[in-house]
Length: 233
Length: 109
Image (tube, rainbow over all chains, first blue to last red; front, side):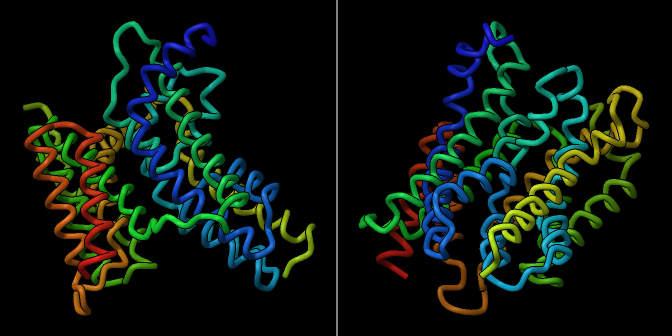
């Protein structure tokens, strides 16, 4: 398997370039904030390696600088990251039979890695397992390196990067469009957009993901007969 | 400020909580093929629905009722979509869209 890794890395790299850009800056922003609060490079290295969840790591900074409350931290981790449950259900088949690398593929399944692996197929000569491992490894290494770089050189940055975080939004919009084009049946995409928007309007920015997930499951369950028919066409 | 041990405990808890959300489906259905048909069905439909949800998630802090009413995001997303439909070049769409957004929020709005 490791023999194939260099060619798989080569095939995977172009798919990860937008993530490289996004994570270099978001990771750096995280590193800057952490070190400004007294958590230096070693701490950044630790959290980005073992937690590896962008939004939660940012929230984690405030958890690390207020009163010690492990239960609160646990509940926040679960609710902020509940969307991963959807990724897992989506990847049951793809990650099946990946053997020794499976635990790492699951551990490293961030939004960006999930989106790439949902839509990108490796060229036929590249081993699928090595390709999935490469995408996951590359993305996590960008995040770790960005964070460490931010912790080290953050205070020296002078280039105005305000707004660069939009790179992740643009990335998901493009993945969305690619999926839209590849599918005849647009109902799941519209259900996702509709349910998320309705939940956002009702529950607000910080609490909408779990209601949105419930609403999506409800719609998919209610319209199952129609949607399964549509999938066969 | 937490002690070093307390900070390590918090980080371990954040890591465990995150890992639970990622591993849970695989713990419930260790063998994808023997998972119920309903789970298979969800596995087929959820990727698309989840990515739509992610797009909304990225835009969750936009305030439509206050200036600039989400205009930088709306304009930049239209640019990304138009460019992507026209040239079908992923990197170009993302790079140009981000550049437009940065110009808008730094100099226009």
